[in-house]
Image (cartoon, rainbow, N blue to C red; front, side, top):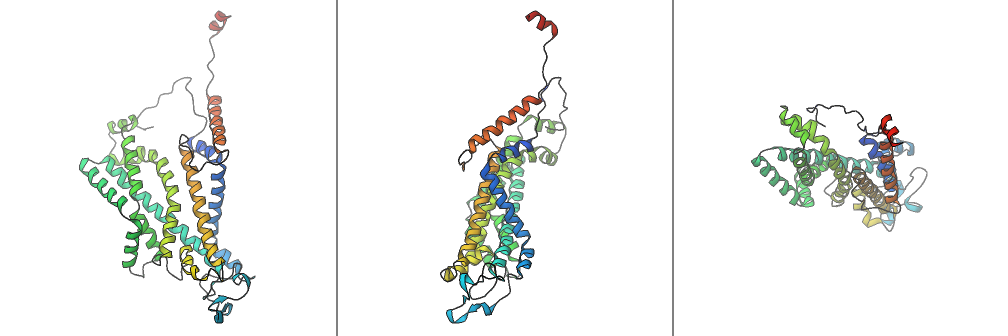
Amino acid sequence: MSEALVATEVPGAAVPGTSGARQFWRRLRAQRAAMVAAVVVALLVLVALAAPLLTALEGQDPTTYHPSLIDSARGGVPVGSFGGVSGDHWLGVEPQTGRDLFARLVYGARVSLGVALAATAVQVFLGVVVGVAAALGNRWVDQLLSRVTDIIVAMPLMIMALALLAIVPGSFPRPVLVALIIGFVAWGTIGKIARAQTLTLKELDYVAAARLSGWGTLRIARRELLPGLAAPVITYAALMVPANIGIEASLSFLGVGVRPPTPSWGQMLTSADVWYQAAPQYLLLPAAALFVTVLALTVLGDGVRTALDPRAASRLRIGTGRRQESKADMSEAGNLDRDEPKVHEPETAREGTA
């Protein structure tokens, strides 16, 4: 509610028993698939953050070559069973290079998750800024920014990313470059969402009251409009992260993304297509990591979307999810009823009834 409006207390008015954050958390907990996905995502983030510690426990690093673990006579196949799995190399080593596969896998999680999150942050920032500016500007500003947004939406992401990555000097940090390019090329959809939501919000009474009280456009946008944009923006951002992971993996697979010796899951898949018969885990491990990460983030994003808007049914509903969410909503209604003050009948009314 706008600070420009003076709130008056009405005797006997109902006071909400739970905040919006508690309601969101209760609805999210009711979705078991989303909670499992949240645990998986938390574990992946923990592995990415603890990559130096995990590789130190193993005693390896992602860039050191081990030529003694490679059978040159057989074309660079790892020595030993299961791709060279041993106490020193928990998941074996890469063909031809002998680099530790476990170390490259956990450091690859850093690159893949870091690039996806950074690209999502750039997309959200640009989309919200352009969308809100278009909705609050005059007719010419709205037309100009809307046409720019349409061009960004229609632009083929992979082709533009390939072109930009090919012309940028190799001295520029590649993970940062990939994140910036994905963010700058793919913010159009969230810009359209922000503009449409802002056009709706600015017609509400509390925004009009703030405008009449003398607030400037920037203050209205910061204090009144951005909180209303939080739910749709968070929902869409949660679904953008797995898509950005797939884009980063695709660019690295095509050889224009993250370059050696920096490990990346997509880059590992690029080399694995030749060696998957000799060392299957060289292909299966990064592919499984990508699959689990994208699936967990997609399920979590859908759960966040459903929790923020309980009227929207989950597209990934499985089993008793609908029944669990119904119980959560009934529990919220019960809490609100308990918190409402009781209205007692006057003594005279009760006597007259008797």
